[in-house]
Image 1: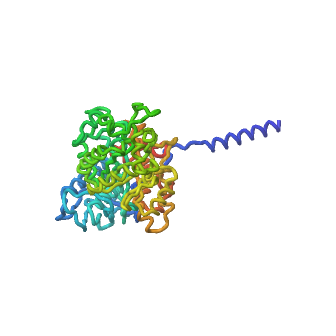
Image 2 (image 1 turned 120 degrees about the vertical axis):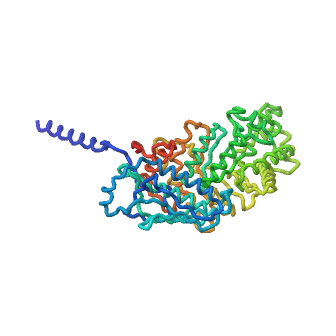
Image 3 (image 1 turned 90 degrees about the vertical axis):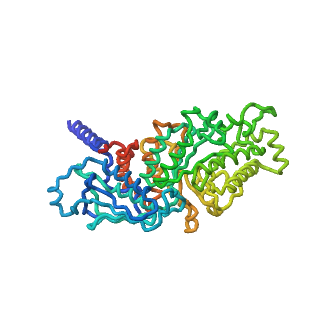
Length: 534
């Protein structure tokens, strides 16, 4: 009897233990913050005092006599629309007036632009000053910056400070002094493996602005398709795109993307990868690519571009001259990654060329090709980025070159690039195409690109990094939720101070930010598990 009672008590104890261990609390897994900014500002002081905002009576006060009034007005219209459509505000005045922290109704955000905005066609560039200060106190709200780019970043911050409480828009008194950690905060989108329609790209640009990214790296072509509609060589997309009409970016499409990005303070850097990843070029122009051999017999396969032919460089010169004129950014990504040497090795003409030029390795042959492309861009007054293999394989590059790091052990390679006096751009741990089960944004968040850099001079050579969305397994229906809010974690690493690394704090802010993006029409997936957006 006693033994039975002991067993029963033990059973009850174990049952209660397991029940408490695996008990699930009702409600969201992570309780979202309210009015928290993403990416986290460099310096912020928040007060318990607050204003209410009546959206349809709220307005912006623009500075007088600036060179880009329409540029600014368009930005103010965008952000007024965001604020006005956040929620249907219901004010119960007597309730709020009884609260000692109530400052009144915020009717105006005054914008002060102390620097020059020369004209309406101003372009974002590397090293633009994006600093701003935002003060909301008992005297009102003032956004101050020396540049129009700082104004854009400050407007985004202001819009995020507004939150809903009891169906009413509120904003706390706040002082913010903010600036980016890195000048290059990029997002790469591959539109070759799967064609992404222009409206999807424009949504991506909106989301980039909401996360303070400032570079859209457009990996526009690759082996699988050539969707860029060239004026010089229209046959490239006529034959090399998935579809000559529905699967191409017309010149008007490219212009639209560039302009949409520009007014959001986002640069557009095109990538036309060479000499590898060019199989789609060969559909229309097989003479550009290397013929592959098996036992000294042509086997019908085509490899990388043929580095031995003058016609190859003439073709690249003509196409890249067009590209530099179409894309206004001063940088051009020429690729240079994953060049397979097997086809070159099999081709007798290539091997004879190497002997004639005393090339002892295929890396030297690749260097010969890249040097020709670099010379072409130099004559076009264009700067360039290359993937890390170009540097690792010993290609001689001027110190102005930006080396884009993407492989495993990237921190070590980045360190070598910077020790060599070159500029580095980091992506090794920020491949959004790499999936983990459940929520995985924290892995991107924990990645610190400057881990092995110790001196200020070394850190200056690290321009920043890019989140990369390769297109093998995403299309127009899945790419946006695959990217967001995972890319948001990378955005904060590139904008905020290095010391901002508290996962618990980031969780509650990212929960709010993902919902914020949802309300703005971005199909961001939930970052932390069960929850709800209101």
